[in-house]
Image (cartoon, rainbow, N blue to C red; front, side, top):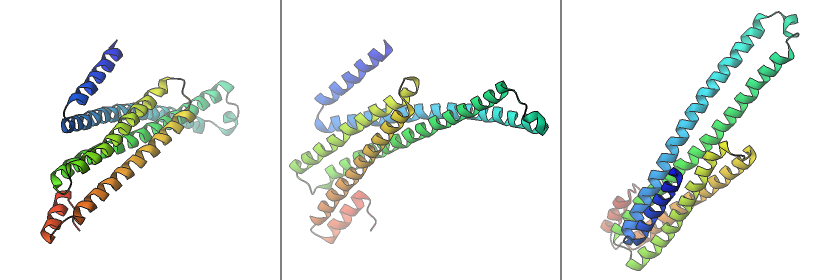
Length: 227
């Protein structure tokens, strides 16, 4: 029931954004994405911390068994019962699995942080482009279409990442989970690179339209360009 209500609220939020004026909608979507990404990163941090605590417990158990082995004479070690050996192997296997999960979660967190950078840089640059003064309304509209496409893909990536972070309790295999994580990571990297190139192209276009040295310095100052 809670999940249903949550889905309804998300749908209402997007519906409201769609009927808002364009600039308000863009700002609302940016804020929504940031909120979702931040919440997801915090959730992953909590899971990583729990897994790290479990790793510490398993390592302590492993160390305890190793110390027990060291205290025994060599001939006694060779006579360890099968049950003891299986127990030791169980600890080792579980520790390896937990470490693999931590690695996967860290990869997901890294991707989410890049999503945050995409959203943050997009929002900042878009506001500066609107203040620039060297672009027509039509050009800004075209830019907005590109940024809207990036926003749409960002939302989809966030959704896919959330699926991966919950897949540890499903039947998804480790290999499939890693495959999906890598695919999303590559997609996010492409989005980030494309957005930065698009931003740089627009800034360069603005500089090319400057009519004086003073205008150039003003544009550089606006976008925080030092050289």
